[in-house]
Length: 400
Ligand code: HEM
Image (cartoon, rainbow, N blue to C red; front, side, top):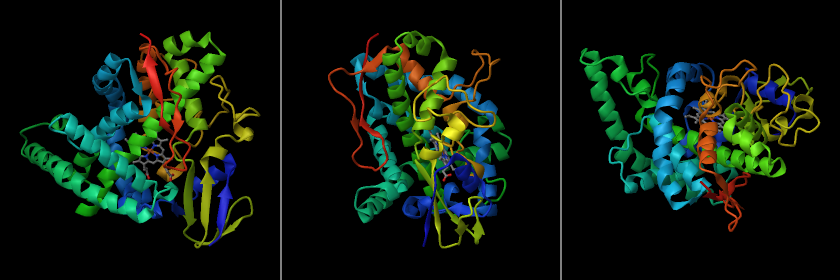
């Protein structure tokens, strides 16, 4: 096997969008990723994605951002505000766990602290399983933990969630309730399965576990990176404290700039499904692996300018490119949670009152409203359990 590295922006886009490239990164995390949406290709991927994409329609995202999420955020934030301090990582994971469980369709009927803790541990284990390729731990140990965690997810959460939805779907079929009374989540869409997609129980279980982790750790890590960049920026540009607190379109630009510099998945891997040559002249065969370096592509001076390595929320972005670069990937596997988390990219005539900012900007906005600052007595520390450049602890205090 030959490994090809692609680090330019143009090369990364070509590889991500190439019809003859198939997913390869998650072979190591098969214990949780096998046959989940992200690992599928061709027709099988297309039909499952079309089905699941129903949950991410524009009007629902706007409704979720305005009506549902603020309540979840306020409830999760309240005890931390009362304490006057918190670890940003812990807080971020708790909020995003609830968010992704809502989207996946995993009920937490008890609403107890014990139930939240169990779910929290499950998501942590699934996340480690999905990114096994970058784990510093013994792989078989992580796999065994994932298998156990899948059993708990199935018995305690998934089966009751399925039963509740099946009853509602049956009532809808009998005309007793309307479509609006059905839960708006991936599990409901998959159980209704209007497109007759093949989905045995073990695949459904892994798909739910995949969703729980796909949205959760990426969102919380990205939130911490973005707030860290905001802190650094405002230390160097003190006049901008007021701007990040009051101009939410500017705050969203800060979030997009941070997403560009700190992609949650620093690389994407692909494998050619047949021999072909890239535009660079690189000849590939089915036995090769193509490592697409999203981090480097996002810092390519050809697109983002000579200061591409620096955080600059006023950076001019050339037409046809996203300010967050390839952080949400490109092509058929483009992240389904992109608009949910990143929001819509603003234009000069965007109305701030009607804009969809994305959940990361909303989260950071709420923390800034409470006067969040780095804890002066406890500096942040990196996560030592992964090769990915994430924070392990990030203590903050509230000054309001
Ligand atoms: C900052 C947050 C996030 C980042 C940076 C991110 C990043 C990514 C990336 C890079 C991929 C594609 C990987 C590849 O091409 O190999 C992906 C796929 C995916 N993401 Fe996200 N993600 C985030 C949040 C979310 C959320 C909140 C959800 C769901 C609620 C989600 C659901 C998905 C799904 C379902 C896919 C698979 C799409 C497909 O294969 O067709 N993501 N994400």
